[in-house]
Amino acid sequence: CGHLEPCKYAILGHNIAYSLSPVMHNAAFKTTQLPHDYGRADYETVEEFVNSDLWNDPSFGGCSVTIPHKQSIMRYVDRLSDSAKAIGAVNTVIVQLEKDFDGSMRRVVVGDNTDWRS
Image (cartoon, rainbow, N blue to C red; front, top):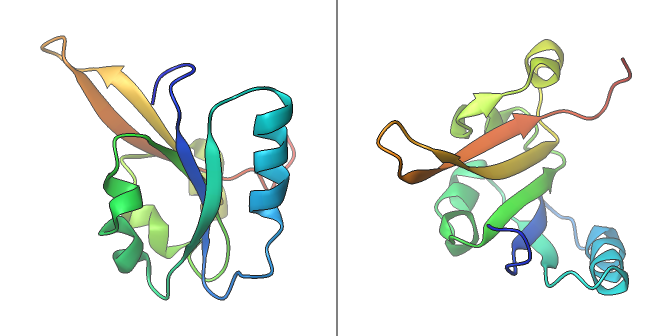
């Protein structure tokens, strides 16, 4: 997902119809004139999510992670931040594009945890 190219984001969880995250994030995108979209990814298992069209979409930029998936998502990311390792859970997934050894761009999925203070 590039700078100003439309990206897709979501909150990942199960039974999350109550979540206000899409409303809040989409309002922020609109206010800041960013072309992104934030939705809900309501899946019973993380395996269903990582096999979904959203996870595999080139425009997928990441997701917030809530119960019950904060630990089970960890095995599907390419890299864990130090805080995610220390806490043993991920609440934020970020998709980055990095140059590979041959100069091509590759997708790297990073798991982070923002539920702490330094």
